[in-house]
Structure formats: structure tokens, C-alpha cells
Length: 129
Image 1: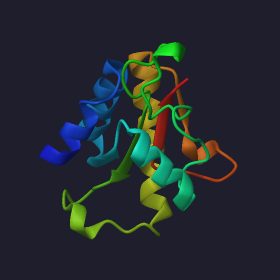
Image 2: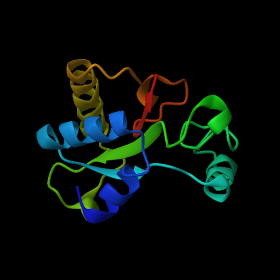
Image 3: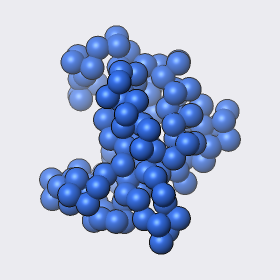
């Protein structure tokens, strides 16, 4: 992962940080989103890339719900370790990334939900269950 990914990952729950790092060892990824502040979440909702308003997304800190850091991240496959070559239409690469996330989550004992299983299919999204 590049420095930008690591900075975004640092906003996430420690379990997600460990999981993403374990995934990256097997299948290179880039983290494109960790915590979203209110403005970012409102923008994501308006653009239709999130179904949740602030502070209901697991990307948002919500102390009332026990979230003191992001309980979700968005990651993209980076098999050639070049973020500039990301192909959003390469569903096979996203599917493989999701398989590795699921496998590593099981190995680490981290319970997750994947956006690929949502009705609106959000392949980059991984969240603590």
C-alpha cells in the first residue's frame, strides 16, 4: 500500500487495519476511504455512492454507537502495485480481492460484512459486522 492508503487506513478500527494489511500481503490493494467526516459523508450520499447520511455510515465516527474510529473502509485491487491502472470494470479483480478479505477475516477472527453482498453491490466496501 502506498502512503496515502496507509494514512486513510490509520483512521480505521485496529481490526480493519490488521485485516487490510494481511490482505495486502497476499493481494495488493489500495485503501481509498476510511473515516468520512460530515461533509464527505453528505457528499457521498448526494452522489449516490452511500445509502447512509452522517453519522449513520460505519465510515463515520459515532460515539453514541460506540464508533471512535471508522468501522468501514473502501479498498480497491492493485495487483500490479500501480494505482493509476485501476480498472473499475474489472469485476474479477474486485471479486478476488473480496475473497481474500473474507479468507483473511476468517483467519484473524474478524467478523466483516462485504459491500459485494449489498443489494446495490459496493465491491470496495468492507465493514466490521
